Image (tube, rainbow, N blue to C red; front, side):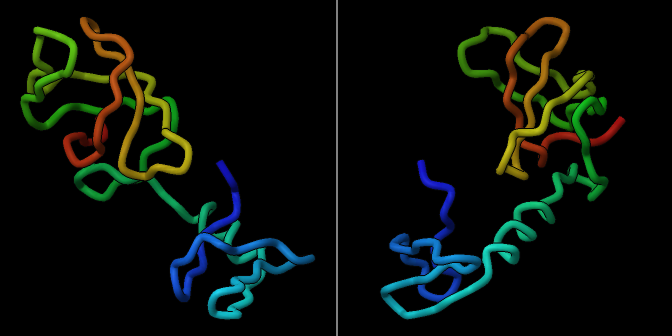
Length: 113
């Protein structure tokens, strides 16, 4: 998988790096590589209430959730300790509950404890 982003103007994936710039051959748009890296760094993971989440935080499930591959549902109020952020994805976190290990959860069902 390539780390080169799609063109922000036309959305095509044919972009290539040239010095300090990315260039799109389809629409001839050029943009600095620093701007693309700043967008990724600015990505913040937030819970349902808008609070920023960081790796190691504790979150609480706000709704009963069915878990694929398990017969045990994740009940409202379940505490998930020591979460890990999924790199490049502000919508998901990884964590473990007391009964279910290896969960990947959407942040829209979580609030910071």
